Image (cartoon, rainbow, N blue to C red; front, side, top):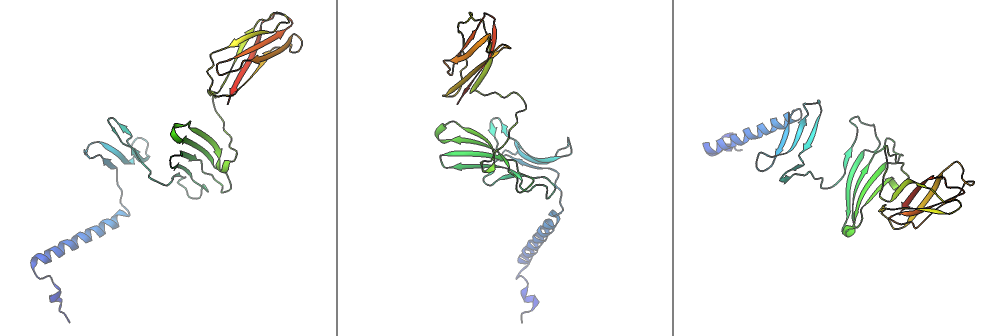
Length: 246
């Protein structure tokens, strides 16, 4: 049976190396144990120059909060944060508050399209999440924005403000007609987007069908339309008009 003395390193140098390795392992074990309860004030990541700050994780002294702050565009160096795959999810701090967390995903079908999808999450597992999809198409085609619920279900959208779009226009004109003679007014300068155009016009009048005998539209295009008014007298009449394109 070997003696304990025979198990010792053959010389003092080897013994010193063994002791140094043992001390290093003990320090690592103690450090790992402390990390379970360690507190780091601020963690910063710098560029290769050791000066340019790329990201910072820590508390916000201004309001008592904190988080991860990535420094975006710092001219002339562009620093970006990438999520290489998967889904970025958002959920309340409290457990059990939502059935499905909110999320952001990015999807691509090779050379066909790319989709950036934002989902609202939901409280109940049977509820439908609201989805906003930003989609680009193949070879520079027109991009699309879809607002819907998941599985193509109906999603209501409220615009708290004035909604405008380049495929519709509206306004009010005044026509002073000759009695019983259709009189026109050309609306120009619209520059609407689309290829098929639909228009309407209605008189601002309390005597439709008696003194105002007719209102119509012709020559509807991306650039404008012609509005017609017929009435039994020459009273100036306001007419509301609108054009929609698809």
